[in-house]
Image (cartoon, rainbow, N blue to C red; front, side):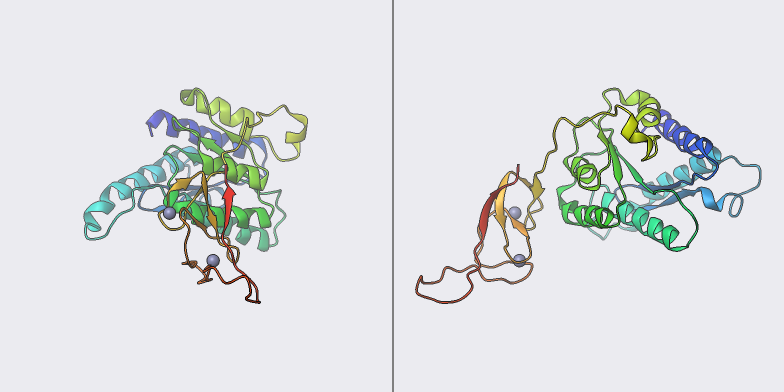
Length: 262
Ligand SMILES: [Zn+2]
Ligand SMILES: [Zn+2]
């Protein structure tokens, strides 16, 4: 993540606030070891010095977050640090914040989440990410996603597809500000009148619950819908028994079904 990239994202947040006086924005930064709020337009002037612009405050807090991220490994040497980015934690923070805002009773336009991810997908986070995505779907909160890395992101594609958001992978990430303002700055009402980019397809591959690896074909528990890469005699999540019974036996059979997930 370069300074130029951060600057363009900061300008985008500033432009969102300038579009409408009622617009609000909160920014959650996430790395490989932590995630936290780095900006909240509602707290303007409370915790920061007066006369500081939203852009300077956001830049300052992102810098503090990056310094904290760099310092964490030395204080957590004894723990097994997962090097995948904590997208699931950031999504959960954002959804909790939106729920709190909606329940505060203040008039608010339709909230939405924009997720920018530079790293590739972390299959070990599949379950947590999908739980957050389905939570957003249930709350009718669209998740717009933008994969800034070199590869397409199956998780971000699925998140946008399930929640009714927009997925995009910029072909020239160095001009990210233009992509953000043209595609993601539009509100939900205006989108129906615009020719926004349509995804060519969605990568629906899932990660198995046993090894956290992305799989094309697997076995799914008929009771709790857990996904496994190999056939099992029982489900490690809910304990359902898949052992074959004699045809003469009477009772409800629980079978694992082979499905194509692509
Ligand atoms: Zn597995
Ligand atoms: Zn199960």
